Length: 243
Image (cartoon, rainbow, N blue to C red; front, top):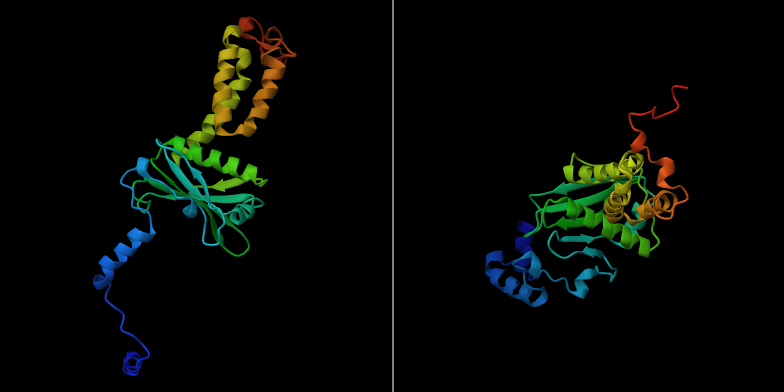
């Protein structure tokens, strides 16, 4: 404190103004430099220059429309750090999410030095659809940049949204296995529903559904008469295990 007073007396340090005195001026400058604060989700507009960081590198990869709006940021260098790492960490906050948004969600990776945040996103609400939009946008974004993401584990809290989406995929794959047990005239309709669910989750699953269609459904190598057992249920053993 004494040193500061001496510096002021010698003209080497100017007094720092109180924030309240500058508050109106600072807000006026902010209004000139930054876009106006949106009053609703639908009024959010992200200018082109804000899509990039200070070094002119693109960071915005998801800006989905309402309803279930999701905004997400990640640098390409960060995603390349995420790519070889088999273990991810996911975490979210509700109280500190941006105004108008219900949830912030982050994806981290741990390397030999520290835990590093890779992806920042905010959700309009707490629905499964927001979670799906983030993952879908992420995989489309990295595919364009030839970045491969293939985590073996994702450490998360007990979040029903994430778990429900994974369970839906597992359920639809199980439904494929159950096709031999349904009415033959319902096979095509059931397969259409399975395709919609799986391919909306991840386009890579289209390889699986195409294989099933090619071999078992439309103009198939193996007609349903060869593998569908609906008409024989309760009439004969379902396996050869008794032989």
